[in-house]
Length: 599
Ligand SMILES: Nc1ncnc2c1ncn2[C@@H]1O[C@H](COP(=O)(O)OP(=O)(O)OP(=O)(O)O)[C@@H](O)[C@H]1O
Image (cartoon, rainbow, N blue to C red; front, side, top):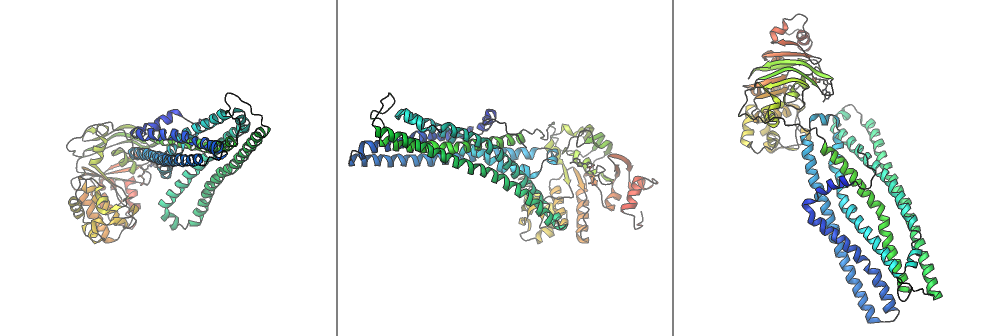
């Protein structure tokens, strides 16, 4: 959770946000100009009221009064137009800035290493890209520029009051220090409660994202009630945080009202006393005619103008500060340097697919080695099967080949060249990885296969589908290749989703195939389709397969038995079976030969 710096304004951070304003500087300048104009124009109103009352109404000058009323209408009209443009421009400025920021953050997130996602909840990232960003838009629409306007207005109003009658102004404004103090106390209180609200929103989003993703588990294990109770607790915390911040408002606003009433009381008391006693003191700042009913009426309007921004100032400072907190959090994500570093530039016209692991050590965290001193070699076009108990390190082996994770020690070579010397995108484009947990996007079948790569035509997609024998099943779907797959491929069967992922791999025509064979059981017809598709995929390619099917294992050119991150045995199916009490033999008996199937 990002910490609030404690300062209302973190200039460095604001400077970074302002960099995003650069393309919209004209909008910013016009908004700032309008803000100053609105503040200046606002104080014209009480002056007009005072003049109308003293110079025309009290002197029964009807024509003069009508002219003044027309002037007031004009002033109001101009103020309304200016306010409209100011609101529109500051809002569009804020939205434009966060649109650009959102693009940057999405770009950055998609370039981060998988390691980052291992420890970052999806809900948290969604909160950053959606609601934390909104707080930055508020910096412009309700924060920075309007604070500037409010401050100008406060200074101008106090200036006018002092100019008209400094004694009356000073007496009227006696409660001012109390107002400033309560504003400060309120600002501090609301700051921490706002932070709490943000924290609770992030929790709520994380909870929802996780539970909707894992809905099938919840329903399968009938955990709805239990999870509902957890949700009620998270939801309650969010509500409480909101109520707490609203509570501060419900205290603050009446306090301001009371102080306002005291100011009015002091104004009326002192002003009327002076009018009645007819002791008008002339001073350099007092109006020539001393205090008049017009001055008192004008003061009432001025006081209103003074209290409105002060009442909102605390709120706006907090909006600004929340924007700063949001910006801080977003820049932290943007500053995460866990991007997949593209160390190499090599992009040969083609690769053969010769793979060699040389004394590879790998750990996800520090030195908790998950792979220990792994060495093996696969020639182009050959198949390597990885077998081993769960957690042995099979997935980790394939994850480091396409540099999803970086190895600790040793080297991984493709065609005799260290994989770090290849351009990472090129390397990945030559390796197709088909994992068990097929992910499909909410899009058409065709786009799910080509992944919207414009270089891949529909004809190529169809040809690849024919090759793996999936064309017929796709054609049978409503709309065929244009059939819309729902989120995560929920509307397709596991076998169908597998087939789509095979076509996806084939259409990219990789030199190396990395395959985690699915363990989920499918009907015989689909099983045959999948088996044929796998054979087709492997043809002429170097393949590393996390093997679960006996047929794949038997036909592999080499089998590696992994155990606790170490290679225990290496050889062909027949060679390994011959090792009495060997790891492979045990594994084979356990997995495939329990029913006494012949070898
Ligand atoms: N993202 C990760 N972060 C930290 N540790 C991990 C991560 N993924 C796997 N591990 C750990 O690495 C070890 C090897 O896991 P790996 O997934 O490679 O095993 P596996 O042989 O593929 O197992 P399975 O057959 O169950 O998929 C395990 O101890 C696991 O807990």
